Image 1 (spheres, rainbow, N blue to C red):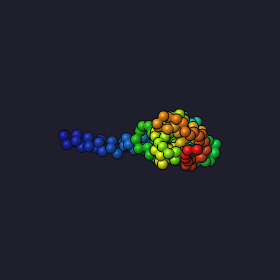
Image 2 (image 1 turned 90 degrees about the horizontal axis):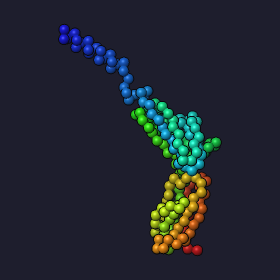
Image 3 (image 1 turned 180 degrees about the vertical axis):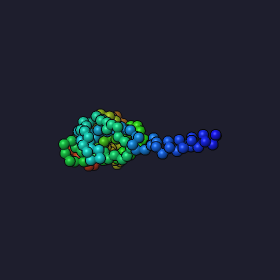
Image 4 (image 1 turned 120 degrees about the vertical axis):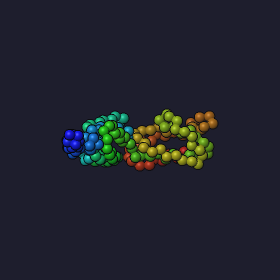
Length: 178
């Protein structure tokens, strides 16, 4: 009798194992991909080649209920074919995935003033830059940015300029005495 029960339970177990899908199989995964626009301009977002939505600067949107797999997120300048960024998301578990679209523009600040300077961008102190040194800021958003340099000794403003980021390239600001 025990042998018959064990045999029946074994058949039930094998049947259940064959008929049930793994909880980690791609079709059982449900995830959301959040896309955040931090590049400074409005963008169009494509997922695996298909247009999904437009995003204004500092806004995010969600690609909902995606199954397991690989997703290629492409950002283009809004209403153009000009590509700004490409990100790949590997969805291998249920949950939330975040993609931040950043500008590829950079800013190289060169200090040839003759003394250490405080560097400000858009009114915020970025740090000190020694004489003869340079610092590269990556992922500078599109748009206008106010740049200022002040002496570290007394915070006297020695140079300022407005940087207008219009394309994905390295911009350079060299600070020197007049």
